[in-house]
Amino acid sequence: MSLPYVTVLDDEPEIRRMLVDALEEAGFRTASFSRATEFEASLAKEVPDVCLVDLGLPDKDGLALVHRLALESGAAIIIISGRAQVQDRVTGLELGADDYIIKPFDPAEVVARIRARLRKERSPGKPSETARFEGWTAHFDRYILEDAQGGQTPFSHAEGEVLRLFLSSPKRLISRAQMQESLGGAAGESFDRAMDVRISRLRTKLQEDPKNPRLIKTIYGAGYIFLGDVSWS
Image 1 (cartoon, one colour):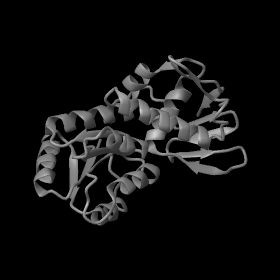
Image 2: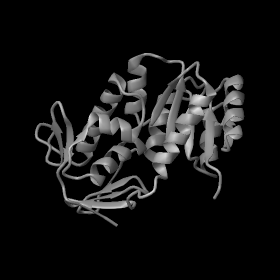
Image 3: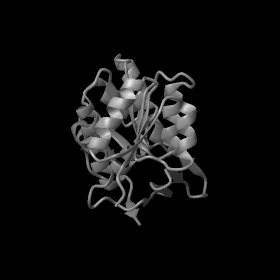
């Protein structure tokens, strides 16, 4: 089995060196980049398992890059940034990041967060990559929702984690605490708001009535229930 591949995108040389040293000591393959254009060119050769992305890049908007990566790459994305406001964290998670770490940080924490993310991705008993429900097909290998007429809508890695959680436990209440435990990340306002946004986007992609959703029901004060019949293949 090949070693997990982690990329570091940060314009500060000291941070790149510190992260690369910690990651390689922990047994990861790495590549580091100071500019977004160099990182994007590398994606044509190999898509990483995890991308560490700083938001303050010299050549591109970091949040726009995170959003595009979430929709197109299928890699897990961890933002590492000096922007510590709750709204910054919420925006990063809303745009598709899987986690958000604030500078300054301990490299050991970054390694631990990466390992936790990879454990979720490779956990035993994980469902198949295709689920069918109520006229829809979710292709988790391609991050695509396909409707009954064959129309295709992409979803992000972060949205896919939420959708997989619902489809793996249909017609069962899923509490906020269970979502936090399953999906990772720090509990609190930023996590709750990010989940609200991801669920709202999934409802839109599933063509749900926002005032009376048919598939993803909110049970106020308790959590959510996915009401469709699901089959995996």
